[in-house]
Image 1 (cartoon, each protein chain N blue to C red):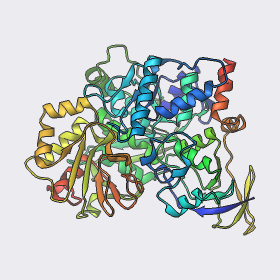
Image 2 (image 1 turned 90 degrees about the vertical axis):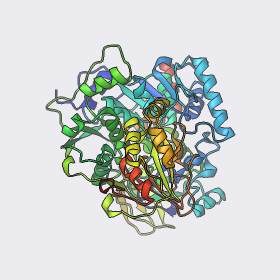
Image 3 (image 1 turned 135 degrees about the vertical axis):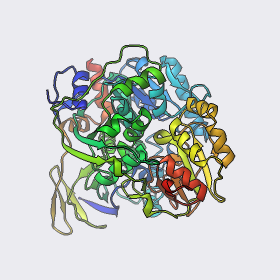
Image 4 (image 1 turned 90 degrees about the horizontal axis):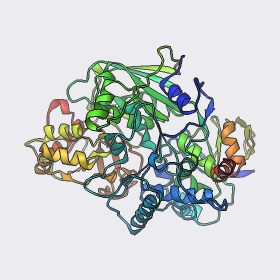
Amino acid sequence: MKQTLVQKILARASGKQFVSVGEIVEPKVDLAMSHENAALVMNQFQEIYSGTGLEPNVWDAKRIAIIFDHRVPAESKKTATNQKKIRNFVQAQGIEKFHDIRGDEMGICHQILPEYGYVRPGYVVVGTDSHTTSHGALGAFAFGIGATEMAAVWTLGSVLNVPVPATIKVIANGKFSPFVQPKDLILYLIGKISAEGANFKVLEYHGSAFKSMNTSGRLTVSNMSVEAGATSGIVPADEETLRYLREVAGVKENIEIVTPDEDAEYDSIVVIDVNTLEPQIACPHTVDNVKPVTALEGLEVQQIVIGSCTNGRLDDLETAANIIKGKKVAKNTRMLIFPASTRIYQEAMDKGYLSTLLKAGAVIMNPGCGPCLGVHQGALGDGEVALSTTNRNFKGRMGNPNSDVYLCSPAVAAASAITGKITDPRKGA
Amino acid sequence: MAKVIYKLEDDISTDIIYPGRYMATVLPTETPQYCFDDITDLNKMLNSKQVPDGSIILAGKNFGCGSSREQAASTLKGHNLIIVARNFARIFLQNSVNLGLQTVSCPEIDAKVGDELEISDKKVVNKTTGKAFDVIPLQKAQQEIVEAGGLIAYTRKRLMEK
């Protein structure tokens, strides 16, 4: 029927057999996620009901997830009060997919959703966070929306005004060389197509590199798809998706796999040879300012960050621990580690990764967004440089407009922590 | 007709429009004070209350890229600005429609600070230089939200029809 994966998902969610690109649909929402900005969603939600005489109740509490991650534990009285209001709302509305600041359930929203099996292939997922694109890694159509739009979803259970997006097919074939990672692939792609190259479009990922990539790597790629402007970055679900949902997320129910039609029509096709891919760095102050690591070797860095919804998973921490084992973080360099969830934190502890990193001089922080968005935990000083596995390097992103943020893979970050300079992990440190 | 009060480059992110450190401030009535906080002269100008309603900020491509934070739209709306850019990032554009911030997508726009622009549905005319530029209109479904007075009013109407 000539439909891309997103067309098929939107057709199903809109009660249709077929939808065309550009057609406006109102898909039913399978999962609606918010974090601390639920405080604003709540405000807008009450506004919608104001003067209607109706009781403001969410359309389906089971389909709403709220996860505290952006400022945990609270950095200010304002945040703490917002979190308190959200807790009260969650209780009043009976929202069970709520993850509070607790060592047995907390984590970054984009890690918690897959880890707890809240996202399934074929779902329509919306989140009041631009990196909601992450969940495309499980074959869902997942995209970021604003708080008022979320309030409308809480009210009506569907997203209004969704133009069916065109899809760019990305085919990545080949094998990653040692110390080259999925992060390098997505940075390379963003550099190639630019920060607005996929604006209003979807990136659909194919090729042998994706077939052999684990869900953690796919989450990295889908997560950063928004940095090319994409509405969503989606990997068609396969055996690996089922493995992840069964073995890691513990999903017991039947899982339906949705795949694009063989004869689907694409806006364009981008081909990438992974065999020749090198470690990549996104330079200040745009994510598409991408260069190979070899062009930046020797640049001094004061802060290394490994973590975030992009690269805070167990295999990321394993990569870092293996590289830094028996070595030390360079003098005058700070290395901050943010496991993406408490489950990852626990597993990394059990496997000895955290101990290795700690002994080397890294600081192990609690799961959460950390310094990625410049609110707390690791702001930069004037003129300082950070090298980070996070997803944005915009001016001021880490809390100081007079600083620079470079983005890289966990392997590059760990190798550079040892030298205090941007270092190619393939050459050893 | 309105005046261009400031000109910005390409890829102005939501972190520039409304820095992350103020994200705990959520109410549209409270966000305007932090508008472009890291561009000190612009922030000062906006907070001086000397800028007439409907003044124009001119930008390049991909304005509003990055975060979904709605404060980026509400802070600009709070100053009653019009944003004319070559194009806008998706989430920011939708947030603007939803909150009633006027955005004008004008891929070829050529103007400088101090120029007077006349904006209509189809064209932006630079009255200072005499040149006219095509506008990419909002989609019909977005236009409906604008005409309803924003997404809150539009959703309320839909709720009452249910």
